[in-house]
Length: 82
Image (tube, rainbow, N blue to C red; front, side):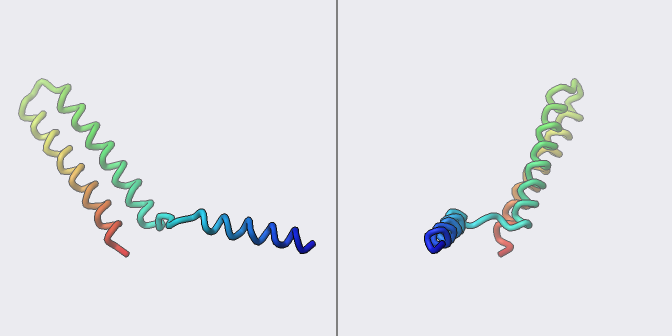
């Protein structure tokens, strides 16, 4: 029985040691939000590439740039929050 308890304790300690520093829920949410913003920016870039109106293409490209900047700000804010 003592060997079994020792094995369980060792397994528990190894599982704790394997976890370096998990992301906090806020960091995880920020990463998901930033990924969604970047996906939206990619969609706007694709729309800009597919339009024949130069003014609309510029507006879509600017909106995509703004979304990418916002995604970067979200990631930075989450990283600096703690």
